[in-house]
Image 1 (cartoon, rainbow, N blue to C red):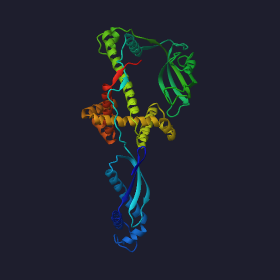
Image 2 (tube, helix red, strand yellow):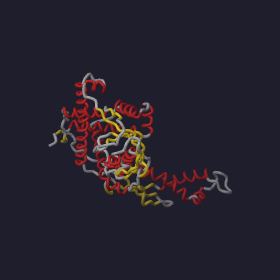
Image 3 (cartoon, helix red, strand yellow):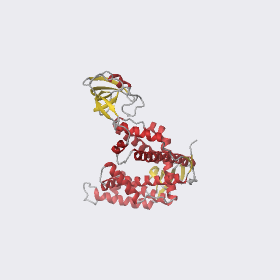
Length: 422
């Protein structure tokens, strides 16, 4: 037995002759009950004939029974935390001799935790200014705008135009079809090709034109593409904004006046910014913990993390309308580009799990139940149905693990020495 490299171990295993013979006899006897040969009654075929005519089947069944059994015994005897599937090599299996083989596998590494309390992170309690509140109020005002139809005339910069838009070429997967799309002609956020082609159009007019999407466009299936559209201009509209006053506040919700709305916005902005600032500090803590600890991680864990990261990205693309079947992955390139990130993520997870063990941080039933209820509300499903689905898919255990990791990060953040950014 010995360490090969990183987390890879090799283990030489010997199965005694009497164990091999005992298992061989059991397999032969089992086959006697099953095989049917001319001239012999069922179950009466001589063992010698079984051994001779079904030698390959006997050998295979004996190996399948003895190799995992004796490997498991030796692994448990050596107290090795094996992960993944072992690679069996150098197999020696001859009649009348012990069965010998070498198993190579990965183990979870043992490592010493460095000091994790009191790490220094960049963090300041976020501030909310009157200007921040004004900007949020203005955003709410824009959301409450009314768009009023104006008399038909050619569209000019500054107009809001209501379109029926459909793609006729250049889009992979499901075509784009929007019955009531409102675009602001000449606005910096409107793609130039839309503005140029909509300018001068009148209500009732239909037109075909191409739109070039930038490489960094937010929707992946359109980024860098040239798409041909057919557009019908249905109406030209004027934007009318409400006044920001007490009535505006009452219309937004259960607010007595504008002052109460401003205070609610202040509280909401502070909570948003605090969550974001704490997340940045926690990410910094994770990076420092990983840099503090030098130990190898099992490649099987890295592969699983890579797969999880790719699956997450595929889900994101699918949500943007990209057909996952159109994605051709070069797994070697993925490993080269994302391997180090996945390795650090695995190491971070192992460190945080070890800290949680040391600090006796666990996920309570109440915490898990609250998260299940949140998922149920979000997906609009009954809580029992969500719980059953999570249990069957093995997600419940992973959910509990995520809650435990988050509690551990909260603990580390509370213990950290916080310094403001320069």
